[in-house]
Image (spheres, rainbow, N blue to C red):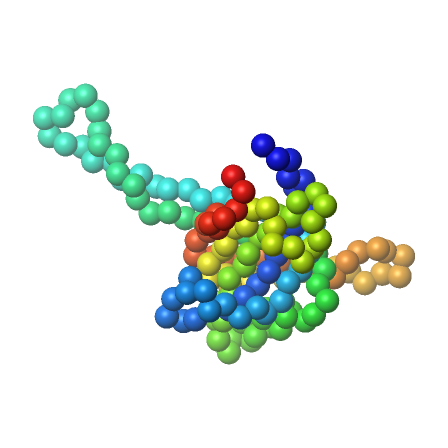
Length: 161
């Protein structure tokens, strides 16, 4: 088992085709490094069926799955892609969705590397963007928080287990 340092990761944002978000026809939009990513959370609401004559318990079936908001904290990026995306959605022109890929990097791996593990978050919608306060005595960086709603997450094939 190899050791994966949890503080070395990046987040890539890309568009997908409307017909099939997982088609592989992704167009990269922007990338950023964040010091914290929270919201790797999915929960399933089970359906309980009570069957007549079955006295030893109920039957449980899988129900609706819900996902937590993905929260990216204390980040920086060299382009304006995230701000442009949020601004476009906030102005009401179109609820443009992007996929986000969280790539965990190895200890000696460059930030542009392919990563040791990757998670894909489908059809993300930015719902909150908080920029760092401007202060000449501060060392704050560009993006304080970015909150994303999404429609599903998965561990990508080929990721280290």
